[in-house]
Length: 260
Image (cartoon, rainbow, N blue to C red):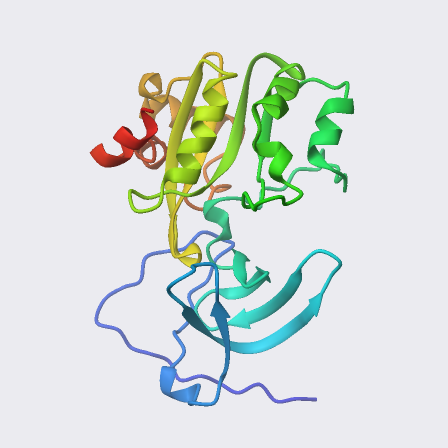
């Protein structure tokens, strides 16, 4: 039977704030303990700049019929999923943009556009986490006006559609702006927002489209009441009414890019 090593207690001159029941404090790893010969992973999503991550272990590295896949444990981000050299998800910040759980979820592995065109169900909320708009890639058809016209036929009155909208900063907003223009040909209310996602090396864009929703008419108190009524106070890791209201605030140059 292995003997557990006791860690020395750390005396601090200040009290630590209490944590929710499902969380605990952890001490940061001493960088000097990693050494110079640690495994590394190079993020290659940017055509000019490269980013290097130190990796503590590789859980899987291989190639599927579609992509190069890496699953690794990192020092700063926890477990990461890498497809074709770009981080898709990291354990430590994924709650900023997905990983909700619901027993009603069913997984269907199929062509997304084909599913929408052949499906007869109707929906109140549609969340589209589409992959990057690669030239002639399999997701190309989901970036089109025709796809959203098919999707709209499957929506109930007062439904909303939320789409992952690529990297979104005033330095890199053209793909997001193109998606926004496409959605505006189908929906009268289309609004962009963005979230800073550290492991994505940038702020990331999202678009909400509908016939009715306008974020400027959404009050902080109303958001807070809705969260409390539907989910309770401890379910969400990041979102508050004030935070959700503020993600729709965009700088002057970004607003200019989205206006055309």
